[in-house]
Length: 533
Image (cartoon, rainbow, N blue to C red):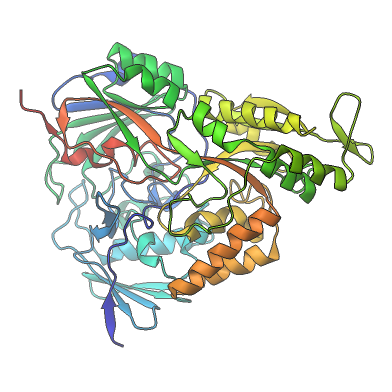
């Protein structure tokens, strides 16, 4: 068949997002920041850490994992570029075959050569039913992956999947190591070996991840020889340690980042993102399961005030998973704050205010809990603002905080202040959060949302290569969310980072929800150079 070459995808086609995941609580000691301030070292504070460092279990699936490389990667403008592949893939005319020619001479950090067998092993292992990879459905389009010699790999798809090339930023694992142990519990999950610019030297869970430059990296040995990520869940602690000099950089919420505005030794970076905060409205709760309640809450919230007061302008109002500035946004789905209309919807649905102002229907009080993760000030602020707005409409929301271990078992019936968002492609986030087939599947579709029109549109969007068909499909999803919200989307958040101004090279990309290891101004730390004095 006649082949064509995939072009790099800009702005609206960046790395996928992981829906809210577990975060470990930490307050690492001074050792976690050893090397802060050194010319050839960098220590940064992040809010979360992965559960595993194996790409076979989902680590780095959106690219930029530091330890590994994918077949493709993203440049500063979020366009796809070759990594372990020597060029962008050739795609058959029917969109069902992707052929990647592999870069020659690449070695894993243990000195063993990289080849086609490693690519085949990685993808086949992830798709294996015995592999505990929660993101397995993201590769649903793959029918088979085969090696053509040792320097070429061919993916055969079940259906034309327009954003498939974006899925191949997924890191490649070495078969000679990972293939000889239990994929779910073997040593490789905590002591990985890859082809990337850095080598993991230590991982103290809940405290820090330490890396050293890979001297044999195919892209050239990094100038930053030691790189440490201190896992500090609490925003205030992270800011304090940055100010004390224990950290060279950190991700911070807007109210804490502004405290460094006048600091001439540090620079603040604002990364535009598709990252949103929303409230899950579980369909199996007697209150949030009522469509009228969901519609009322969707317009009772004052999104603009949240952006102004909680984000201090570092973000925008959210009406769904797609930001208003994206070409994928469906014009006309904006919802104005309308408390009077919200009250009317509730009145007409039989939710009548009681003596205390809280509504009730058939003996059921309009009340439910809303959980947020401890130490996350932004989520706490969003949760409190949502509860305040809901109370004005006659709905009592009680905010509760806890770890994900506490929250996850309650997600079936309790609301959660959640997050998500992916600039790579609308399929990446929406299929996982809105598809009824994934209801209750870990952190996928946390609200157990079930809308047949949305399910059909999600399939149409992922299985068509026609841009017009895909735009229409995702427009349908957004319009359905107006009529039948499964979540109340609140804000899209700009990510703010404060970094010591000692290097040339830090910059930002358009970011997904997840931020920490693969995003932030250190997305390209392997390219940083110490500033000349």
